[in-house]
Amino acid sequence: MASWIIGFVLLLLKMAVVLGVLLLLAAYLVWAERKLLARFQVRYGPNRAGKFGLLQPIADGIKMITKEDLMPDGADRFIFLLAPAVVAFTALLMFAVVPFGEEITLFGQNVPMVISDLNVGLLFIIALSSLGVYGVALGGWASNSKYSLLGGIRGAAQMISYELSLGLSLIPIVMIAGSLSLVDIVKAQQNVWFIFVQPVSFVIFLISAMAESKRIPFDIPEAENELGAGYHMEYSGMRFGLFFIGEYVHMQVLGALTAVFFLGGWQGPFLPAPVWLLIKIVMVALVMIWIRGTLPRLRYDQLMAIGWKVLVPAALINIVITGAVILII
Amino acid sequence: MTLYAIIFYLLAALIIISTGIAITRRNMVHVVIYLVFSFFGTAMLFYLLGAPLLALLQIIIYAGAVMVLFLFIIMMLRVEAPEISMFPFSQWVPAAALCAASVVLGLLLLIPESQLGKPLETAIATPSDFGFYLFKRHWLTIELVSILLLVALVGAFHLGKSKLSAKSEDPS
Image 1 (cartoon, chains in turn brown, purple):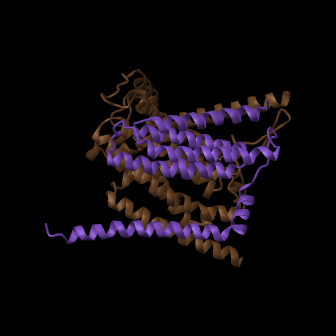
Image 2: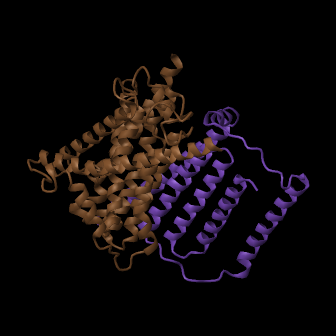
């Protein structure tokens, strides 16, 4: 009984630490993004709140919480309240299966450094990312606005399309690792990272992941110059904040997944394991910010053509080739 | 009553209530949302019975893909809630009779087994076990079903395409 309680407390502690780190990092990713984008565009970026604008995320948070919470006339109340929660919830929950270290022993208990080692962890992530579509589609629909509805429909179409190539790009990884559990996938990369074994998969995964997170160059669901702000146009205050947090947590989750599937997860020399995972997450996030600062937005037909005519066939061919090579070896 | 039994009854209640709400709403988007809740309950039921793979496939395919497509179409077409109308007697009585008959038949099948109140053994099917079972024993069925889906897909594409080209030939 005592060991059960200790295990439960440790689980709660792990969840608290992961949640805290995720939300803090999300706040400072916003800061890093604004600062870097400003530099790419030869501006200063936020520099008023604190040194280098380091207190800017806190100021933003206070602003969002104290803002008036508006609901448009004729909005569907229940769904309008539900949609932002779905976005933030699915993004946060995805981190539950990401391993951030080797099993350690604490108070005479084996503590796995992952919140939940599901044996179908990869499918868990795909399931959650397919549920994230609801937040976007329903948020756009419930706002009772034409622009929001268009943004929601575009978002749903885009996310459904790119989910396919996202899932297909991970099948070779599962074939090589021989498991759907993220812990086992990291362990399978002890000798060589999968980015060197599966470079095509890596490229397909990264492009699809960026399309899933709806960032420039894949941001037509919220294209400012056509739709105002797309599916979250009618949201204000902390409800908009939830969409925003969802997006940046999603960025970190994608960074973590890229690290787990292709960059060896928490493995690395000298530094402790969670630090390595954090470094890899931040690296991927910075690359995504860099791409955002570099590329223009895709047109809708280009977006669909890349998804269905390039990424899906490439992923399928990649699966066949990987299968053939595994059979021969 | 064990913890599992309590969870089972909670899930069963969730599934029945959300499906019941789903079939009585007039707003189509609300219907979709309640059906998604119901699928969630089903998925958790699968998980409880020791089939995590099936549970997640239920979420990915039904809650995540099929219902999103339904939602997509409802949002695109702006389906209005239908007028309140009572179906004629002759239309719903056969359906109700068929339902009642199947419920009675199901109960009759269950009772002589003398297994009432005997819980199922808990078993966990790992994804690889499940895959081996499915693709070693039932590979022909799976191939047939996938060919059927492919035919449906090609058919839909053909129907959409012939209309599209006819429109583009129209000079106006």
